[in-house]
Length: 70
Image (tube, one colour):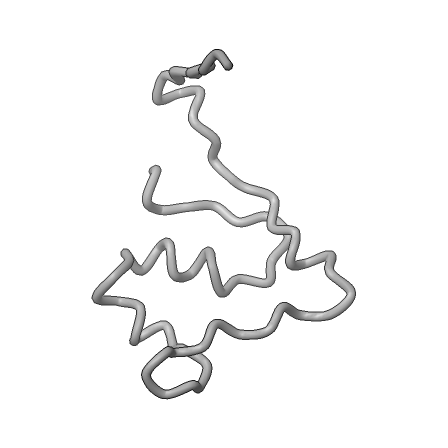
């Protein structure tokens, strides 16, 4: 199988992404903290991910943009 690679210039990079969660009939179950078994909070994710990515993940908006790529 051949690998296809797309190289985009900075101007070609997406500015927003479609968030399917906005159109689901019901919300997805929350991600659970493996240590506590309770829904994980954005504060618990901060040591692992930049805040902009966490905001994207918890967003219920149909279109989301990332400050990470701006």
